[in-house]
Amino acid sequence: DAKTTQPPSMDCAEGRAANLPCNHSTISGNEYVYWYRQIHSQGPQYIIHGLKNNETNEMASLIITEDRKSSTLILPHATLRDTAVYYCIVRVYGGSQGNLIFGKGTKLSVKP
Amino acid sequence: GAVVSQHPSWVICKSGTSVKIECRSLDFQATTMFWYRQFPKQSLMLMATSNEGSKATYEQGVEKDKFLINHASLTLSTLTVTSAHPEDSSFYICSATQDRASYEQYFGPGTRLTVT
Image (cartoon, rainbow over all chains, first blue to last red; front, side, top):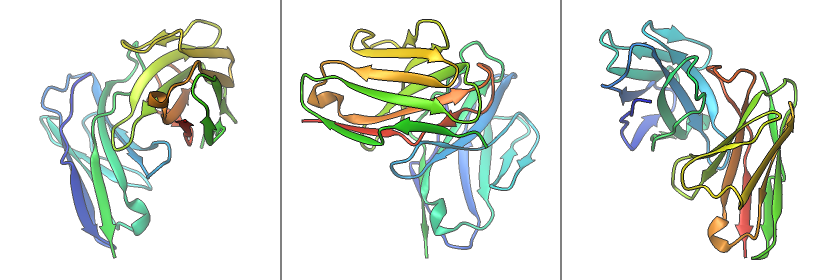
């Protein structure tokens, strides 16, 4: 699977939008972008995934650039409970492995 | 959404003993389960992949005789840490998927193992 690059940490004010970037310049045409987050001492939680179109669900929005070499996860109105490590992962959907390879992620701190 | 549970949530054991961690899918049948390990301030590292009814596939560097994985049913996988040592102290997390190729893995809450 392709590697991703994320900033190690980010701060965001409560109530503001949190924009978390991810670079995946070597992504292949059949690889999806997934986002998970991990709140301290808990298991990871799925957030969203996409291939090339922008996606939105009740948790977040995912913006993927046209060349697919980078993406941004947007939490529209961050709350203190959104403080977590956010992982951007690229993976083939339908691939033989199925497992997720976690990088270091971005530690998002939402401050009051 | 699908729920995965782990038991126990935390355990303390003495060096040299064995400890078993259970991972259960509560409302779906998990054809594949994954076991991860996470050391403090580090990311999750995949240890092994198990498919129901077959032997687990271990990642490079993970001792299969030390970390015994059993996936005897579609709702239960167990990880047994044998002859535990203090360096095995870690956060162990399982995940499950209904379909090996599924985009969504459901993670358990994790088990904190401390070996004294």
